[in-house]
Length: 96
Image 1 (cartoon, rainbow, N blue to C red):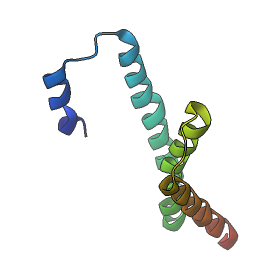
Image 2 (image 1 turned 90 degrees about the horizontal axis):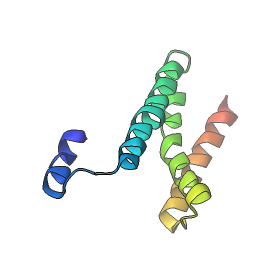
Image 3 (image 1 turned 45 degrees about the vertical axis):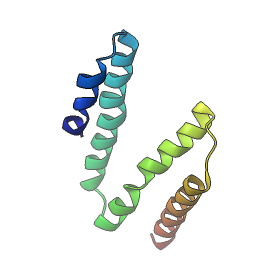
Image 4 (image 1 turned 90 degrees about the vertical axis):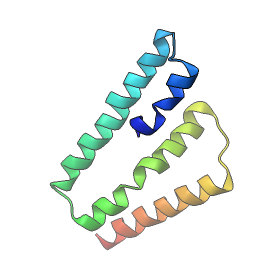
């Protein structure tokens, strides 16, 4: 992904202020890094079916955090997506 986006800062310039770099590091290390640590730890303990469903928790959580923390309105597509994720998790939990 980084290689695909590399032309953007080369054409428009790199962020000059430190806060942008801090947020970028936070997203990369804390957000994405932690998500992968938890995912791979789960792979050692859970079955393939559970892991497949839990992969979809990530985008659903991002949409809900965007709404709760940043106050962005959820559109029909986001609501439908979160609903589908919730239904899949409910079904998975019900089946055991």
